[in-house]
Length: 425
Image (cartoon, rainbow, N blue to C red; front, side, top):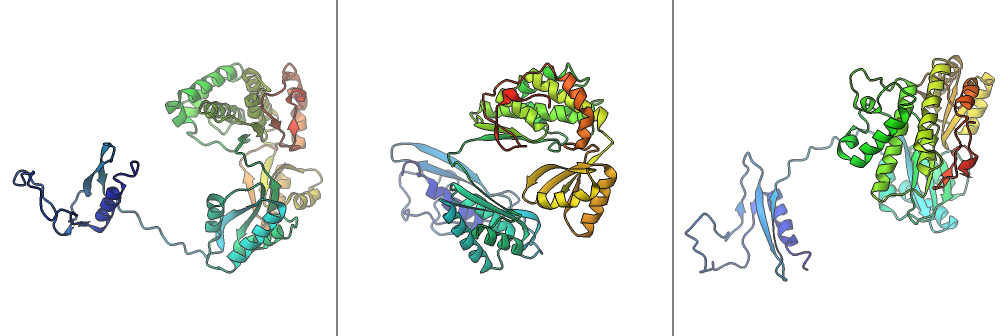
């Protein structure tokens, strides 16, 4: 009751503001004789009174007098009128892109049963939005050890894949696994493509921990680059932009390492790390496998080699098909296209020769398969990188990783790696 003292008055006043009515003063039929009511402009409301609209928002004071003597006073102000949301003209089962429905259970059987119940529930309610179902499942359900997720771009596709999850079938767009629910943290470091103009500027200005980490990264990178990390982040006049691979990759590395430092400063310590592509360099640094100086050298010289030896010779494309189907399709180009990354059950990135990629994109678009070009002009994670292998082996020969202090998982094998065994290859 002490903590809740005054809440009733706040609720009552919010309702009065919303309805535009000043409620009658309760339990005051006879005004106190201890107050000189003739002084000032204060009076009791013997009846409910309209609260007129003016050019200013309504305001009111609410006092709270706790039973133990705690006194508080709050001033409330009428909230601005909310803009009415435009009604969506799309059908309930249609969404702009893929959505994920997540399901969990105490056991494998419980997971299958839950998927079946969810399928029946949604199937019986055709008006449910696929996106709304996804939001509710992700935010309002308990999370258990056995987990499954189905992805799809529409109601029927999602229902079909729920049926596959319930039937323990292995199909595209369905993933399942067993997780630890003790709330452990994993830091995941992305590759190139996560950048945007102005990123990290707010943290540079507001977080001393982040700013100090960026400054350390700038010093570590300065031996290998002829530009200022801070100038690039702030978009200073004359600073290079993110169009250059030998700029964007070191900048992303610095931002990721600095973000990890910031998280640690507030008590969020990773129980494991992993990284994709050049994100593995930041992951190795944060895990303690590489010193900041060695990691800066790797990312700077690697990106310089890509810029000098690969840029302008290739490309990359995201394909909305399972990896086995992608492998079958690209076989027609006889090694000119390679699988670069498997991002999900139905999302694969390929890389290779520009002409071959153009032909593949035209073919898949003709079949209405989702394809999207990655905005790079080189072919990472393909046979193209063999042309810079010897250069990297030479310039990185003196770097010797050590065993990490934080478990390091490989995105190539999916397994825990002893980072002391890592090398330039």
